[in-house]
Image (cartoon, rainbow, N blue to C red; front, side, top):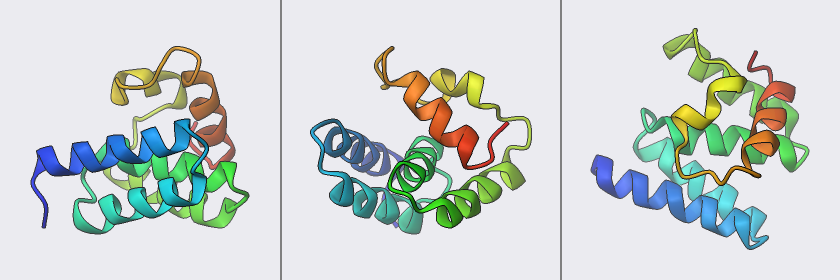
Length: 104
């Protein structure tokens, strides 16, 4: 099990990979965060958004469903509060992907 700091760094690495267009690497990185530290909400949400963006809708829905079991009040319009390292222009992209995956 990795530490919270390690999981945050790894989750941020996945976001950086996404930013430079390395989508499959980003998904693999976020999957490792989910496996080793599933409570790391930003990484798990990034994974759901990346699954959705990659056309992996069923997997995205499954991840959102898991997140909603732990945090039922979470809403896509508040995603910037959960994932503070998103740039302003990235927030609407993530919100839309998470909405398509089932996050209200």
